[in-house]
Image 1 (cartoon, rainbow, N blue to C red):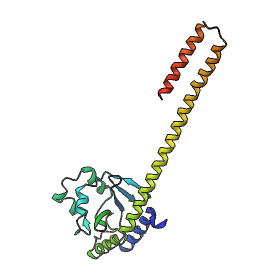
Image 2 (tube, helix red, strand yellow):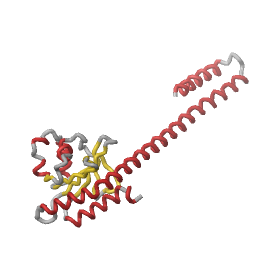
Image 3 (cartoon, helix red, strand yellow):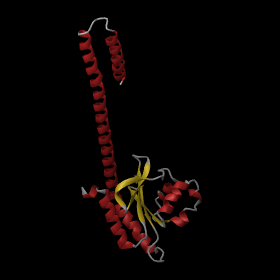
Image 4 (cartoon, one colour):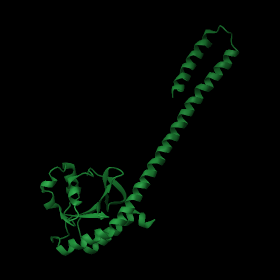
Length: 220
């Protein structure tokens, strides 16, 4: 299961990045067409996928999806005219992540995710050879990360189905209980009627009330 464990794959990625460059922050954005959303994996929560406000159709992702883009500087990229339609929420996400370098991940030439790296520790900037190494890391891990993402999405889907099944079971139990109660009362009332005078007004009124309650449960 290790190759399909997204948390484990993320840890391997962070370890590989640490051998290339030391950064103040890092995160992994993964495109999830099944959810019509972009999810994020961070070192602080490597085991789960959290949805973001970044749209799959975001101009930011469209620009990063260009095959000629291997590594992008966020500071330069965010002022490009092509990104003027990016929402404030989308821009805020990258600001929160303290993004400095964006490294696209591609599977079969199609954008599948983005490594978001913050500033290097210290005051040094990213050197060209470091950017080249980061692009190489992204190329090496892209497919394994995508396979792990697909597995995580499938696990989340199974968990949702199990939760829905449990909720359905609880609902059926609740309805069964409500049905059994008026049925028992009606049966008892019928037995009482059999043992009471035929013109007993109190019994007739009680039966009418019980049948009204029974009718409500029948609607359920």
